Structures are given as structure tokens and as C-alpha cells.
Image (tube, rainbow, N blue to C red):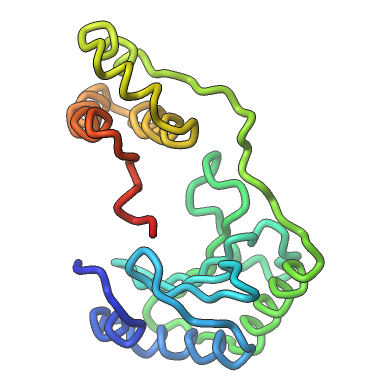
Length: 197
């Protein structure tokens, strides 16, 4: 799918979820969040801080909270989309036919704003060690330039590449990922650079 340049364009590109996205959008704007497009999708900010995003996927619409793990979640509506990987972010998902409870969502968003105002935040774990998977270590031995370029990247970019390979379950997938990222590393770019602004 082509990356949208506006929220209206994003919603029009998601005809199966357009009504749900419009309802979510209205709630977020009504509480005073600033609407921007980042990474090709709608993001809602408060005091220049990303708080909430909305998105349509194949089988659900998602409202995700960047610091959702801090929410009380009394109604048990939030899920961790990447258990064991995602530390702070949580999603609220809606499938076709689900009624979107606007009052509940507004309460969760207002709690998010209050947490932000109070300075509550789960920070990324920048102290965890960089674990190089065997496949990448082998590639460094056979291609010394790859190691030089890899070490020139920031720690977060190196960690991203290492985790991209190590999180694959099958050996074939690990090798396919390694093949795909090798030219990227040699070019000095990060795995997610194209999504960053």
C-alpha cells in the first residue's frame, strides 16, 4: 500500500475500515490532540509527543497507545501486539461489526494525556546487550567490510538488525533476512530508516 500524505487519504485507502477510522479520528480530535501523518499513517500528539495512532489492518482496526502499558485498563481492552518485544505500546482492536464505545476510548485517551502531563513514561531499554545472531556473525567473518559498516551504525540500528534476524523462527527465514539486509548495512542505512522522518 502506498504511504498516505494526509489522514483523509489514509482513510480513503482503507474502504473496509473507513467508518471505524472516522469515529476514532473524531474522538481523538475532540479531546484536543494534534493530528499528523507519520510513517504513512495517522498519529495524534500532545505537546509534540506521539500519544496515540490509528490504523486499519487486514482483519481489524487498531487504536494504539505509545505508552499504553501505563494505562489502568480496567476493561481489559488492551493487547501487546508483540509480546516480549514491545515494552510500552498497547493496542485496542476492533473487528468488523464491533461497536466502538466512544466514552471508554475517550477515558483511555484522557488518561494517556494525564500520564504524559505527569511525566510518566516507559523508556526503551537502551542498556540491554547487543546479541549478534550466529548468521550475522558468520557474515561478518566472510565479509569484513560488512562488520566495519555494521559497527559504524548507531547501537539502536545495530540492535534492530540483530533482532530482525534472531526473531525469525526458521533458519531459511533468518538467511533470507540476512540476504536482504546485507546491502542495507553496506549502504550505512538502518532497517527502519525509510519509515523515519
